[in-house]
Image (cartoon, rainbow, N blue to C red; front, side, top):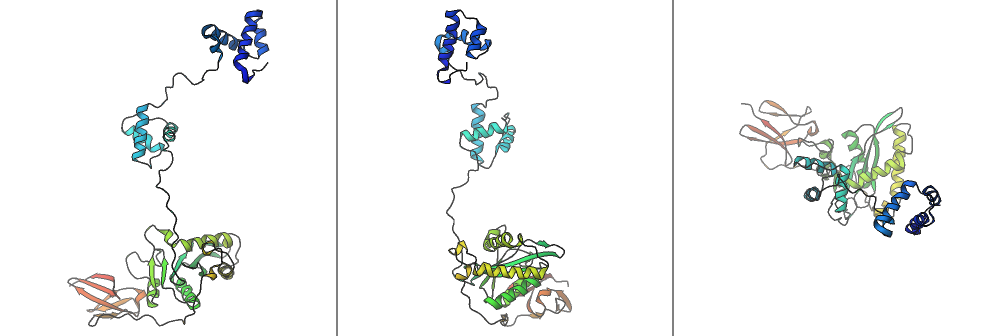
Length: 370
């Protein structure tokens, strides 16, 4: 018969009483109570040595635990973790070896951290999220290119998008055949003609937006001539252009992944149709679950507008950048930039250095050879 879990001690007592009082054979009693002969004799010895208490269940944990972490080692682990919250079990194990302590296993260290509630990253308290946005339409546009995708039997395509920071209205959603300044400027020009000029344009630090050596880029020149301020993101701060990045993720999920485009023209039509849907039909959580057009109130402006004139102080030494991107100075040709062809630059000679400025920005320093 199986043990009754509600009275297991009583069952063991009855089994042994049947043996002592009725002199029943051990094999028969064991079969009746569903235990082995070894188990029978174990409880018989316990009863004789300890009395009724010997029939109770005992802990099955080993008496000796040679792998148990000592209090000293556990204390060192806790101290190391508190001093270095980013150290995990692997790093803590290495640190213990470094200071001459034989380390426990990775799991043993993890168990210590859990006992002291130190498992996981001890991050600072979560701060309340604040959404930053400009106060009116066309105050700031975010511009970015998305990673390429491939149209089968046609080639690579680079999406370019611009989003108004205040309203999330998408002013540019254009697939480009190449990631080049020419195509970016063409898209900007068309968008300015439709929606007017933003006060500022925010981009990342891509080479078509920012030159690492400090020289002006074509995009920067284009914006400056139209009186538009250019803001680039901080180093390793891609979330600064988070609104256009989020638009690209939505574009990828709702259009690029779902459709097969025949060629670039087919993609352009699809992108423009999606831009209309996104602006005029699709609810946007950031604008109260209304389409972006509900917040984007634009005013048409004449375009193109005359480039902003750059004035230099009276008496400045000026040179015009020739078609080959060079200026002439004291019988020498000095290369400046193809971007500034036809523009005036200011030249200042300081001892053995020649400094070249466009507007107030130093764009070139040349060592003079006597």
